[in-house]
Image 1 (cartoon, helix red, strand yellow):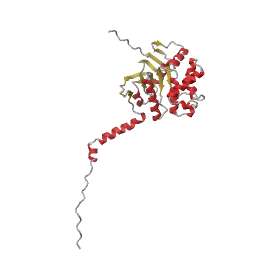
Image 2 (tube, helix red, strand yellow):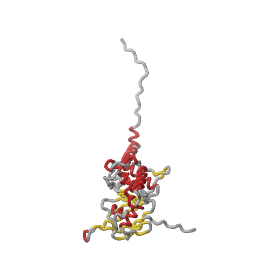
Image 3 (spheres, helix red, strand yellow):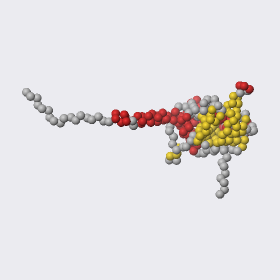
Length: 290
């Protein structure tokens, strides 16, 4: 039988190092990081502030460069490419969702989403038509001509995701995508990212929220510029979909479990027994003697 070909990682980092500062004041944001990411993975990167999460995401998204090591994308090293070549790769292959949305306040929603298409030299009408199609997928077609400051936080983040997807990228990078949102909006955003993952997109997400790891197929924890742990997560599949607990339901679920344990205890069962009712006498009362 022929030997099966080994699948080439879509992203491979070898001894990647990034330093800030000079001399004795130099700080290693990334310290010889080795990492392989396959097409279609949903990766959550966690760790304390300053551990190198965002720096790693910026280098993967070609927004920053490493000082040492190699970054291989689709089997080709990108370290020696020019800034213009990096921009070309970003416009065709990588979509980036920022925590602070990074929408341009003087442009309406439609033009914000269409903006990445300008780097492809696409005509204005064609850009706007494509942006409108993507906004419909996120049920934002009625907000096309709103200004960003007229939207809620959840709507702005959905616009930011639509902008990241307008080029049909295969890789989506999300830096704290729910960091500025309430639990309800966070759940909506994560369900949308989950749907993109099911369609085959590779998603790499930086987060501080451990609840969001329920959406990931792999969790990487960083510490002091290094990968401290890297584990895959078994995802339960039911009715051809991924079973998820809504973000705002985790605490209530724990409360239910605690109440269940209390209810099942022997003391609780004894206290729940219905007290015996005293039977009322059915005998007629004797008439009082005169």
